[in-house]
Image (cartoon, rainbow, N blue to C red):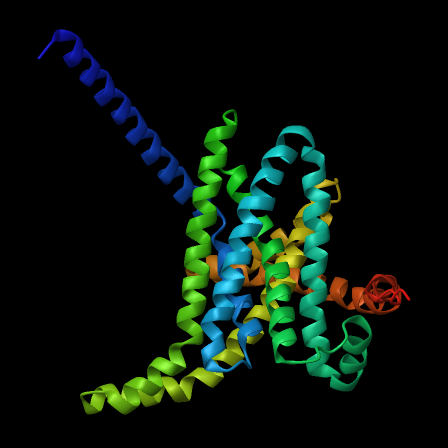
Length: 326
């Protein structure tokens, strides 16, 4: 073998080592960045199942797949380039955009709570804001669109948190890490959602076809437990919208110099942690989420009449079909 060929192979091996090290570094950085956004990821997983509730079992996984595809498009096509470009050229715009998204989450969560407390008024509000779908296909399309819209805001928070955790300076490196975060988190969230929505079918199969009495009993237990679990998860998802939205607004206000609400919440959380130091972290988080949720609920309830009497009439103008040409 010639010396030149040996040198070439050495160069190829060296390049391969550098590439492998770079990939390892990107994967490691993606795991760190994803971990920073773990709270928003959990909220995303809690919120999504309520959009699938009420559909026939054979439509559940196709709906999850449609939402997951919309989610990855949100992250890769819109949010990844937007996050990088805004961080480079218009960093001041990120905060107000996130706050608008947070306000929308507050509105969505408050609307669900309003429907629980005042069903008749809520029905009237929904009829004005969003007309009822004409058929099952349209209902499915609207549920998927609503889930993707909510996912967009939660994904924006996830991508922003992840970007903040990535060392700046190399835009290609940042893009690679964010892309890996996008794929990883989308897989985790919607894989988990798929398991949740199909758990009752698995339980039913186990109850009928289990080879042991213990297995059949487990299946029956899953079937009995799932309705209550889904209701609880729906409540958690609604609460998550409110506390995440409220938290985004509180953090956004601090970014504009109005940091008193954020300090009040932090002081309250620290005071509660000091009372029960053994579980201080959990109690502190619950306090923070509760206070942020109260603020988010106030914002959401304020936005309900705004959506009905100001935003919906404007959107209604654009929804109206133009008369056919003769």
